[in-house]
Image 1 (cartoon, rainbow over the protein chains, first blue to last red):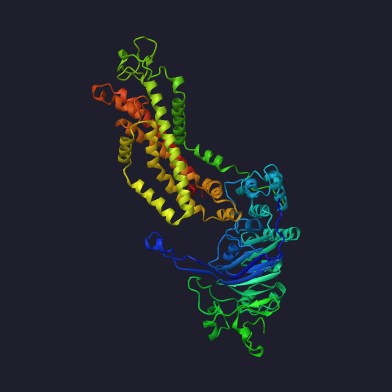
Image 2 (tube, one colour):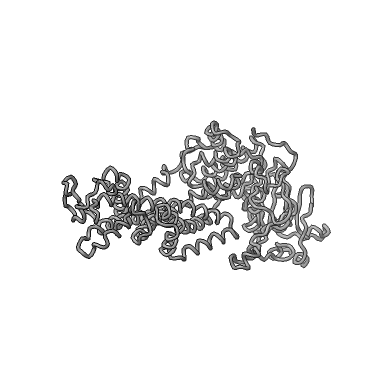
Length: 341
Length: 299
């Protein structure tokens, strides 16, 4: 009943994917039925491949486009340009993709329908998709709840009768009920207390082992990602600036932005060190700076950064970075922060 | 790992009902409404005579004041009789039945039509949305009485035609509220979540969005029932609404109108009073519903 094609296609593959918001809709604007809005470049030429089974941490400040990328991966948004494939299929117009990819939101209070009992929230979609019959539905729902660490005895309650961590477990159970192979977690632990965060992260790791899941774990918090990810991808203003295996990433960060982000993580072992956080705010995606998007905040920016967009190039096996400094001969490389020197 | 859910809260509907019952005026309104509805539903059982069975009424009993006994002596006319010798109490119960049927029926049908169109407008946006909403504006800008008079003049009297006219005039109110509410709801995460689960569109709209839009629509529905009853009474009073064989409260008022100045006030007064009580009761309930279901009052 639930045979899924065993493909070797990666869980997610994006080729030069861009997404703009608020493009004027010709006729409606001309007839004054809609207002012209500035165009937001949420994603700008994203190339990313997530092999099956990998746990990828996607990190960026708010406005970096990380949630947009997550939504495109989950088939909730279509890209303006470029090609997306999820397990080799285009998530647009193929509803069956939703059985393979599930999105877990930041705020479980908001992502659960307040007027739906837990049992129907979890059981509705599997029933509609024919994953489970009406007769076995109750047992199926109980199994999903147990797997997410919830007591099935509470399945006839409403979401507001649960605590924040329990609500996130409900939304995890709801996603798992679709028997997905790929979970997109959009800031899924950000709204929880630190102790609950750890519980939910442990649940994610356990599910990964039990169900062989692939993860795109979106977060603004490198500390969270550090604990769970195999690979870390950093986004800045709609572009990927660095992409590296986790160990390599935390040991040898390449991009000045990444180095700034890592400098912001408090570390007990390193008591006396230069504290050099990234200065300023992320520019508006409606008017991104030319050249390298990061140059207005970059401590080592030079003329070329203001004009030319740096390509995302491989600088070590599996380690990609988008910085013009990587083009300079090795001896001339300046260390951007006190970290490296 | 599995601790008990916090707060042994009840379902939202139960909480709302409890809050509703805290206001004495609303309880009075609700009681009055229940009384009138019971009277209308069991009119046949309660009424001392069938006021529209010509064999049961006696012209000799015409225009008797309240409290008089009939010529045959077997009925006391507690509210008097009309120009044909009908027991007014019986006529009012039957009339109430017609009025409530028209009011509730048209509000219900208009609700279904308006909510569906409102949801469709909110969902599709663009040109469909613009078309539906301009139609709503058009209908709401027209004086309802005038349109109703015109439509009934064309269609002729009859309960069905009155309901049709009222539905045509009322759906716009539901559509506008349903659309506004649905636009708010579709920005919420649970809507995205439902899409992410790959649920079909109609299911998302009816099972996820609609229940969350319902509170303000219930308030509109209550007030639209009152509006429909008033409008129907006006039309019947003007001789365009309910047929003579199925007189509503409006027609009863019209029937007694000519005797108003000759001191036989009761023929118009009691149907009018009943109409007034019905409208006040519905409005009391509707207003309290608004207070109870308004999210701003809850937070």
